[in-house]
Length: 138
Length: 247
Length: 117
Image 1 (cartoon, rainbow over the protein chains, first blue to last red):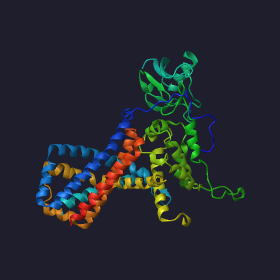
Image 2 (tube, rainbow over the protein chains, first blue to last red):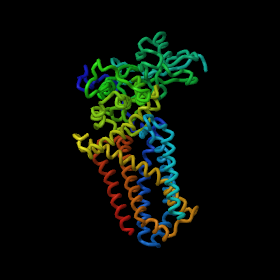
Image 3 (tube, rainbow over the protein chains, first blue to last red):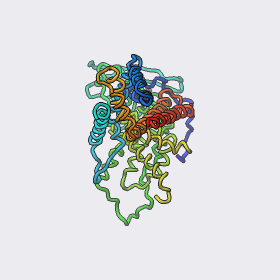
């Protein structure tokens, strides 16, 4: 970056087109991307929801029952349905893309991406099974 | 599929106008014609004033990148038959200033490529008498994909971050840096890290992934960037734990 | 200078949070957001849930999942505001809102989980 260009960046006759505020609507891939990014809001919401559950449990059985009743409220239900969709979308896209960042070498050769992907999905199944066992079984 | 197709081509003549216009041309569309053939037909037979870049006409020089029906494409590799009856909208590559008609300014891109120091960096140069560097096929495979870039700038056109933030270093530059970082002969990772870790470096990338989608040479710059983020972040952590002098 | 060295750490936390939230949140939303309220499955009894939650390992893992997911969400939302709404010039305010919010909620999480014992 030490060399000066032969002419300056300011060139009044070049046509510079600014991206529109709705650039993310222009292509399906961009819309898909923004949807994925917006899952962040729903992750944050659900953490708050979980913490409200923890607070209810720490206050006793009646508080816990109140929380369960509140969770049946139509607004809360709809919100959580939407949350589920976004969170699953986040998980699916995350596991699809994570192998790109994690390149594992074994004896000088790269492990195939499919293997990394499979182990990610395996971990997902294991985590799900663990939660189910903790809450419903055990 | 008739024997003619309409091309809606962006015209911009800075000496006459201050905004772009669209001009329509009817060109023949034999089965094997690409968009570039259509443009060449316009220039040869219909309107000699049309200005655009092209060279090898076989997808290796990277000169003919344009936005075709909203998608960044190499016009020499995009068949007219893909568009049925048309019309086919041909615009200059997005995210770059337009100099004239379909020609965009590429100076920013060129400077960014140079800024990542795309050459083998050694702590101490090897003498000629020491012989060649030896590299196994596995070592070659580590970086070969990232070396396939033809500098066509389709990835910069597809990257929304580059469109919003022209200072962003961009996919091709980072992939090129990786091509050298992962080369077993190179010892310059630390030097490149300084450039890439800057404010407009890799951390602006949010992994949209469109750069990889449009790359005609399957370089996968998005993959190169994410992999490099992990390397750079872990390296950053190490520098907190182990002082530089001990490394 | 400080911002320059924070980005890699923030990205690592974002990644860890992405993994944590991808692994644990879907099933939790399915259970506590849909299955239990709608009666598809009967919710755990108070005694059972309290027993599971107050175990130190559960509290630790839950704290980690919550904190990491909050930072993940904050980091992602910050960039969405930058790029989606193109308000990067308000970056100080955005950073404060996003990461500050994540920190405040994490502290609340820590307090709630500590109090369970």
